[in-house]
Amino acid sequence: MNRIEKVFKKLKTQNKKAFIPYIMAGDPSIEKTKEIVLMFEECGADIVELGVPFTDPLADGPTIQRAAERALKNGVTLKKVIALVKDLRQKTKIPLVLMTYYNPVFKYGEERFIADAKDAGVDGVIIPDLPPDEAGEFIRLAKNAALASIFLLAPTSTDERIKKVARASTGFIYYVSITGITGAQLLLDGSIEKSITGIRKITDKSIAVGFGVSTPDEAKAVAGVSDGVIIGSAIVKKAQGNLNGELRDFLLTLREAIK
Image (cartoon, rainbow, N blue to C red; front, side, top):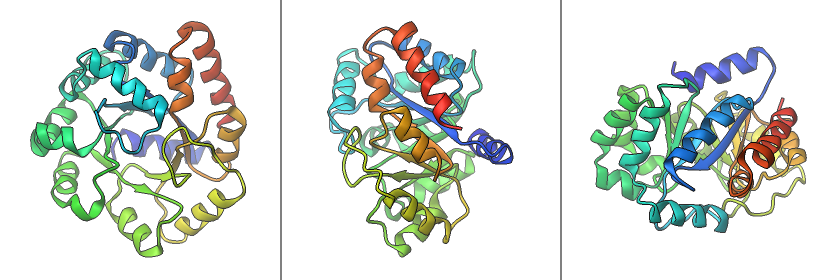
C-alpha cells in the first residue's frame, strides 16, 4: 500500500474526503512551485497533483494550457519536475502525483521514468492519453515499483470500460466530471452522483473527481458523492496573484468545503 492508498484508507475511517489541489510545475518558477506545494500541505491538502508542462495538452483547458506554456518558456522539463519532487521530499511526505502526457514519458523512456520518479518520491502518475488498453508495460513496471497508475473514467464510460479502468487503476480512479477539458463549466444536476453510484457497483476503489470544480460550493457538492475532489484551473488562476493572501484564503475555504 503506497502513500496515496494510505491517505484514502485513513480518510475513510474518519468519514472524510480527500482535498487534491493541482498546480503546474514551473509556473511561475520551480522555486515558486515548491512554495505552493508546501502551502497546499499547510492548508490541509491530502494529496498534491503536479502538472508536467507539455506542448499539446489535449485534456487541458486554456488556463492550464497557458500555465504549461509559461513553464515551458522557463525551460521546465519532465526531468526537472522529477528533480523538484526529489527536492520537495526533503520537506514533505505528502503524496505527490504527476499529471503528464505520454509523449514526454515515451521520450524519457518508460522504465527509466518509473525508476527515476520512484527514486525521487513520486507516488502516482496520471497520463490522460495513455489508456489502460495501451499501458500494459507501463502498468507492469509501475506495479513492480509500487508507483500508482491512475486512469480516467468519464460520463460516457460503459460498464465494460469501468471494469477495465478499475482493474488497471491503483491509488484511485480519476473520474472526469464533464465531457470536456479542464476548467470547463461544471454541471451539478445529479449526473455525477449517478455515474459514481454506477461505478461503485463495479469497484470499491477510491474515486476522486476532477475537471470543472472551481468554487467551494461545487467542491462541497462533489465531495458529498465521491472520495476526493481535484481542483486545478481555479487554483492555477489564483496562483497568478497573491500567494500568501488570495491563494491561501482560497485553499483554506476549499479545505473547509471538502470534509
